[in-house]
Image: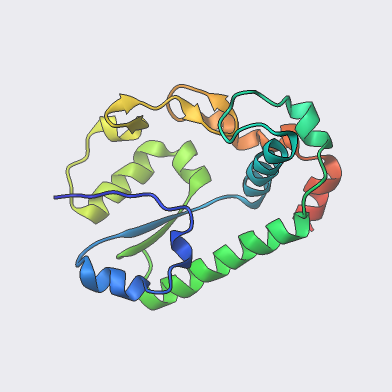
Length: 176
């Protein structure tokens, strides 16, 4: 009765209205990352490509090496984030806020997992179970984050990891 799928580029579908027509009473759920967390994740991803590592955490690139990596377009990454936020705003205007189109703060989910997951189950009209607050894949505990390594459960410490990979100058530029 429920199907869940993940698509990193789904926000840029041109036929989201068709999605809601075909899948009646469905939900389109979009996470919103803090800009510093997003830039840090993108920097890690690009540094791994540059240094010949893989997407997932092996071999591990040390954070000090990633922090020194500057062979990426910071302005382009900021434009990507801004474009996504603008698109989310436009889609909320078209499809409503917290109805079928739901945008949520990734940081709020990490900090307040129970409350956010409870709001999802209320919106979806499904029974809440505490197990929904524990990340799993195929019913098995999920081991973590492709950018920051293995962790158990929802790890609030990752919210400050941007400080490990972004230089002071990059952080100040993003803030401006």
